[in-house]
Image 1: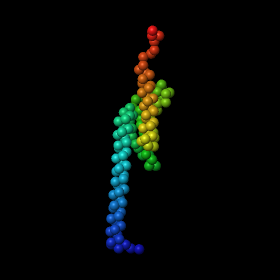
Image 2: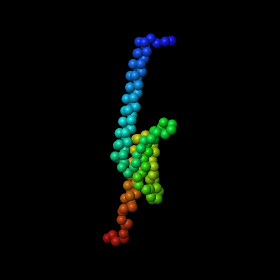
Image 3: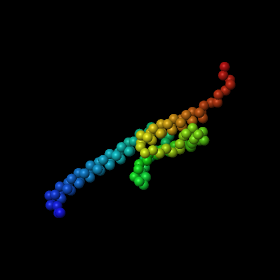
Image 4: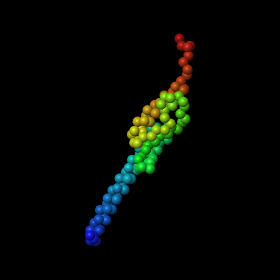
Length: 118
């Protein structure tokens, strides 16, 4: 079955329109990922945050704590690296992790209680 010139032209026009729409959607997704990364990085400056795709095409949002994890922090549940499948789930995990990190810092800086209190 051969296409006429008019049918071929019509097919090419529709294909071009569809390809442009797919390209626009891909760019929108890329922009969305960049915006999510920017928000996460501003919100959690103690973490190096990235979004990477594995060999199967699955996107993974990862965060690596920029400071060393002490034994006390690890015991309290602080993870050096957090990996989640979505930006939202990473943000939720980092909220908890950051609270743990900050509470451990606070404990380390608090003066030891004394018996001199009246």
